[in-house]
Amino acid sequence: MTTAEGDNATSSSSDVWNLPNILTMLRIVLVPFFVWFLLADDGGYGIWRWAAVVAFAVAIYTDKLDGDIARARGLVTNFGKIADPIADKLLIGSALVLLSILGELPWWVTILILVREWGITALRFVVIRYGVMPASRGGKLKTVVQTVAIFLYILPLQAIAPWLGAVAFWVMMVALAITLWTGVEYVIQAIRLRAAGRRP
Image (cartoon, rainbow, N blue to C red; front, side, top):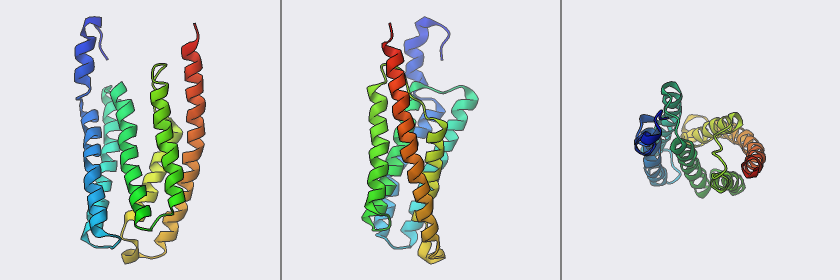
């Protein structure tokens, strides 16, 4: 992001505190509030459930907003490439676990998604010395479909229309399929990145 080599240390430090990265950090901060709201409702469909919906929606909006700003203003940083998917995984992961704890989502769905998500995150750190693996188009689609599925699940479905529960489940199945497929793609990308990095 800098033009002068001597400015690299200063710029790399200040780049962390740009607006997109601050929004990413805000998303991480919102996760405990979302968790608390959902647990406070305890599987019901009262005011705390709606608070959880709002917290989730705001967090997801910051995800879109920080990406748009980073690309428009040329503020894409290595910190953002790493922190953004971690923030997503904290939000998505906590939502999946809580929905399973509340008995609204089968545990096998949560386990498969979490194994893939954290496995790919760990893989990113393993190959980071060879290069950064940014989110692919398939990975972004996966996040969008997962988000829609979770949003349908956390909405007070019984208070609106019981049949939306079935819709939420099938959207989640599509999200699961995309999640597993893109996981395979990331593994292939990591293998290629490592191979390229080890070439003399």
